[in-house]
Image (cartoon, rainbow, N blue to C red; front, side):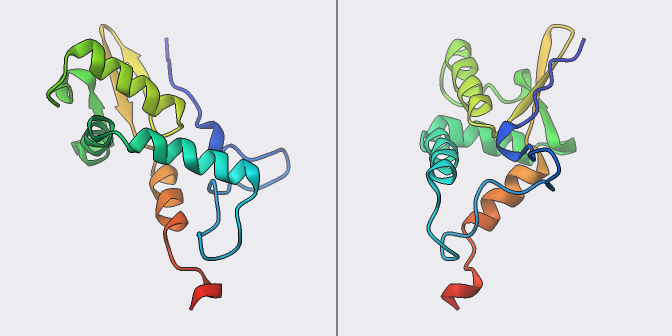
Length: 125
């Protein structure tokens, strides 16, 4: 049984192509929805433990990490689970249960969207 979640912030509307959450900051002002989406991502990454967990998953060999491989971040296991849940809620991670372990992964589209958000757009050049 798969427990994989689709990242809602990257899911296209019917008839549209997939698009990252937001345009580059320098391209145009954000809409209210774009600002909410970006703020959720940055808020989730604003905690040092969450940033370490996100980095551990993103840089793990094979592009995914078992919770057993990334829990050494200086907090208890229940706290690790809480932070991973917050990263999932922000659309930054997906997960899949395999037996007793949960495997987390960062979708490449999430990293691409975050990178695009912080690039200098044509309007600023």
